[in-house]
Length: 281
Image (cartoon, rainbow, N blue to C red; front, top):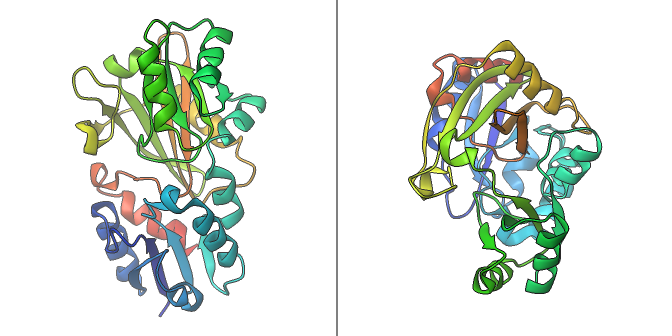
């Protein structure tokens, strides 16, 4: 019987809703599945046949410790999904600049130091009157701020919200109207998609910020576009989520998540079984 450990976090140590059905699918295939917080004892990960990093959602609060934990995972005897080297690369949003160099359709993006002067300079370089800035180390919209060129206080607030370098981008208006489309891939193959829509007068699509999620039916071209973005990763991902905004002009890449993405398997009855089969393979 294979032992599988889902890496969680100290503040939310148990299975998240997405992972309950994934764990059940693995148990139906003869595995034992248990959660363990990454920032508690390392022993469960050393003993496991398979470690699946699933809800380490506080990693950006302890970025140095999390990096050290990923380095330790490289030496365990079991299989780790995703590869620690890939997760290390994905843990800093500067990976988006790397993907842009490889041809990813990223919105115009500037790296900025966390101060008002640098943020204003980045907006000026891109001729933006309104911009979004997000920290390079963060998750779940933590630290994300909207800045306006004619509102100095908004730029000061953005600088104060950053604890590290930030990425400055234009605010994509279609996020408010079309939402953000998330495409989930298992073993490099498309599984399912959802569209995440923000609450009124917001650009934040996460449920904790009032966003809502529904299943999405994508065209073959849209799926191929998402897969082409996934193909730009420096190494293959066992599981990944590609987030994009399907603007009328062209799809724009927002993120590719390979550390702890919510997989939205609750929107596809067969998704947990597909994921379990890929994990065991």
